[in-house]
Length: 336
Ligand code: ASP
Image (tube, rainbow, N blue to C red; front, side, top):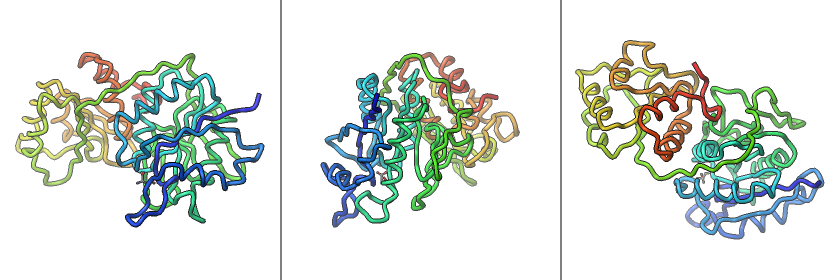
């Protein structure tokens, strides 16, 4: 049977038009641009239905509400299509991909996010290749995962991160091999894929108070005291190297203790592009250890944040959340 893909347009550079204030999304503009791309009529490219959101967004404006909408739209149409392609801005694409990976449990079909650094209507747009290749993978390949395809790489969504604001290879998967590559042909790295799920279950996120904090030398930890309230449900620290922080005069220990008492989940990731944060490897991670923080290991910050959304939205107790934070749920972390 002929393959069919559902193409969901959420916004982002790929479908933007030029305006006097710079690139901005415009309703109907993508559809008219697509009509001029002859390659989309080729037999090699699967047929697709386009769903364009009313409120097209620069992905800087994407929030939990849109994540849930995308997940729901996929779940509602899951049986009708062979795969899904989500057109999305690059700025927060890795967050949305991670969020979808947690919300869509038991996935057995490809869900591929893609976009462009140059809008489709421009002569040098990278969007044409990104879109066509994503449609071909979504329609024809066995990839039971939420992925990002960009440039020439297919990456696990919750392992990917945006590494360049202007290069056409904008994403990398620093701690996990690419799931595929498009060169002269399209190759899928079968050994790196997750097993197909046996039935889709949608786990919707709810808005949560979560913070991300990057450590830097000379940081005065008094200033974070005000954000560590009882309302803060989770905090992700981007620590030095393998999970280290300055051994200050005890302020950090004090404020982290306060967070622990409040029941805030404290997660420690590394600010390095590659490698793992492991609490206990160095004495300079002891402030975290004493406050009951959990290691984020080699998770991206995007994965850590969206995993917090996922676990907090399921209303687990604190111990369960901490246990699951260090458990690999969707291929987002390397288990130690
Ligand atoms: N600001 C744009 C967005 O994220 C950038 C892009 O799409 O590449 O929507």
